[in-house]
Image 1: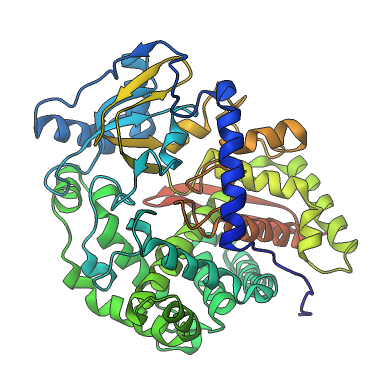
Image 2: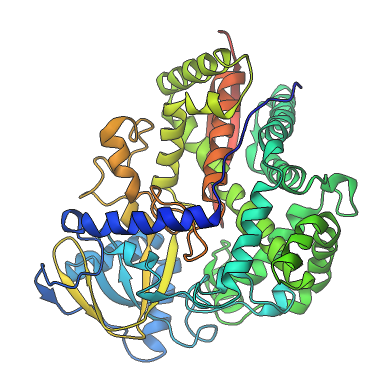
Length: 511
């Protein structure tokens, strides 16, 4: 495959900081229009936060069982509270509760107006809240609190986030060609599956491809040529299970699953050997990035475990959820949408010398909109948390709510990004939703990255360091599909971490 010539642009954290301050000033100026920040003036009528947490222990257990096993599922759990209290800001208990989490009580923010307070680290503290009301044992991360659990006010936050910016940018020229090579092989394997059995499991192939791509593009090392061979995805998922099992449902009988996963923590010792194999790989393959960490004042072992977490939990985990979601929504979109995407992708590539470059991708606005729409309708990370740093008023569309210092705020992102007062036809996948000026104005409500899509991550916030990288590789996936195929069909199921997607046909490109 010819190597494309292009420049993958990531701005420096310092430049990001300047732009972020400008963005915050702009956000404050527009607060009157959207009522989505904490306001010093009480424009809206005040209302006490409705709902309650029930009796100690009993209330938390009741909410946990309804959350996991109620008839409406997770979405129904939150929607029922909104209906019962006629409010999108409510008090409830968040799983797992006893005996994993000491205090399950939260103030839930369930609309697009109240949700963004969770991004403002001058108002909320993010310490140890990455997984919510409990924090997994640091025995699962080499004894270190990795970046995801560190608040921006802590002195090690900026060096650790700088390390991740470096990880994402120091081999940027390899991202596009490596992606095309690895995912080209994936589609070749899927075509073989279809020829043999008439169907192909996208998720299984994607797991191997995602980890291989990340390691080759960002570290210059193919895990298949290491002692990990092809075992890394299984090792990672076992390790992830031990961290977030209190938040998962695996389809086991209710009493068995609730007792095994949600009531007690799984012992880290059971994955120590597997985690050690992963750490050994990154200790070797990531040596140049670890050197940069040392220059930033980070101990080498701390860098190892932060790189491992960023690449395995954040990046690989994100691709494991997002890519099947993309294929699901695109597959369901139908032939007309497929035709529009194929026409756009192929015209842009032809106009750029037959190569997929950054310039070619910039000439694919429908592709970019389709990616944003997938991130809106099914965000890879559904939940965000923050602890109030002071007494304040949080505003929904209609009311202001008094929140006390120390209270835990929780946001369920799908209800914010499918808010009918912001998005028309919110439950529909509309691939061209973000085209044009009207579409661009909606982007500030796309918040999958722990911040608005219109902002860039800085050293001073908790917005995903890989925000632009994730959008880029999702666009590359869509472009790769429609360079190769006119259309495709899928069957969709569900799994513990998102959609299960089986491809049942791939119609090769005819123009």
